[in-house]
Amino acid sequence: MSRNVFTALLAALIFSLVSCAGGTQENSEQTQTDQSVAEQNTPLGQASVQDNVSDANILQVAIGSTDHSTLVKAVQAAQIEHVLVNAGPLTVFAPVNAAFEALPEGALEDLLKPENKPTLAGILTGHAAPGSYDPAALRKESTKGRKIYMANGAYLEVTMQGDDVFVGGAKILGTVQTSNGIINVVDKVIIPKS
Picture 1 (cartoon, one colour):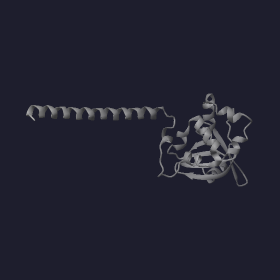
Picture 2 (cartoon, rainbow, N blue to C red):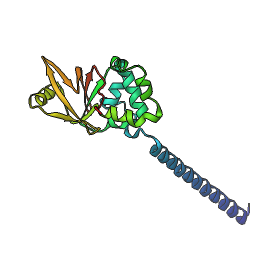
Picture 3 (cartoon, rainbow, N blue to C red):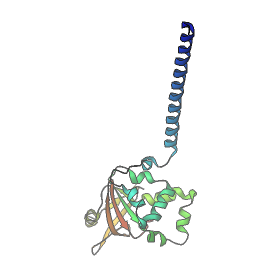
Picture 4 (spheres, helix red, strand yellow):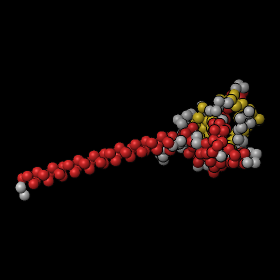
């Protein structure tokens, strides 16, 4: 093979390798751009992160609870999952399924409609308080006559009836510690007063 032919083949080979590498880089950059756009368009934010190593956060605990499937469905309909996965500390007063069933007939179905998403989000964020409020902390707030500030801007009264603690009229049935805060399981959906 002559030296000119060998040089021409080598040049063609190098050119094709450089072209392929450039195409791969462009494809990689396009894939990263597509992923960035997809992440921006998702309302889940941090809630879309998959993590099987860390302790469960409030959203993960709620998803794993059969007693809170209606709450999870409502949180997803309102697209506020990101609220429940923030670093916290956060306290969520989580109504059980029976609490949603006790709402007036058709109320839940109406709230779950896409056009009522802002109303539903307002009601649900009225069940979340910045800070850590286990039943002992809530008892202290009650004895001091304080109200708890909620994520929707409302203030809820804390009261006691015997050993039972009530927040906004909802009785605390149990408490679960999570990686980003506290879940106080409650027996009622807390509806804001108009």
